[in-house]
Length: 417
Image (cartoon, rainbow, N blue to C red; front, side):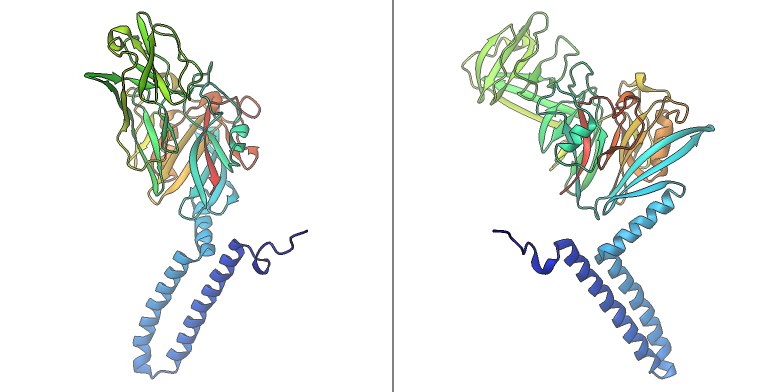
């Protein structure tokens, strides 16, 4: 049987909210109008004092309207965007989310920039990192990544190994640490009530009996033969090969189930430690083992972490620490991607086209100055070059060299709640 009535009186929740807001606005206006008539009926000596009080009331009433009415909030947001980007093409994405296309000139040369700005207090959206698939060694186009949970906006995320797709640097999704930091590079932390940025390191160790062994990284490629690395099922079915004179320890349900030099299956309820035999040989099969792992800073209640590097803006100042984060190879004018936020909680995503006559790209310092100019108090660089690609509501809005953008390991996405 067909269902005819799907919502009360033909209105959905947003329409009802808008109707209530409009009625509230009219009631405030009506009260102010009545107060005006009342003042006109007063004697002159009382009217002057009453007019001053009314002026205060009008101001307070307007403030209440702006704080309560979604329509006035949206209007105020729209006006602020127009003032910030006076010569830009501005498009609505969702309530509280704008897509801005602007061309800037640096040393007389053009640069096309796409910006998504979102008022997180107004928009009913969430920011999160998204992997190409449930395994790290995978890549997909940004459109396919965005479509996983019907995201309205997506921007390429952190660095990744082109051959495998494994992210390089800290990545946390829904409170689960997926990959560990590389060179303690800067990362953005996403919380229910805002954002934070910091250079992130890993504090991890395993303890079995009287043995305590430091773990150098999580689900990352080996950089030193002396490191002890930990691999979870997110990495794949098997651990990578051991280093020279290496050893592997498989752990299931907090118990060591096998030890040896060769690759092994990664238990679904555990992990595999891979490192020098001199460090791991003391861990014996059949023994209980305890893993502790946290990031530093130990962000309380952080939901997601997405790394990048270097810093662009730090506490309101341009700050580009290329040397400290070992990123000399990405200087020069290039396509760029960046993420930042303002003092009042607005999120800003940026994609810069480059390496073409119509848009020459930006240096990191030029990008940092741009991020500061549009109000970012903190901002970080994301993977760029051929990876730079921005998606807005089903379309690629910038001009990557590869049509539709290259296959990516991960992205940062905006989705409606």
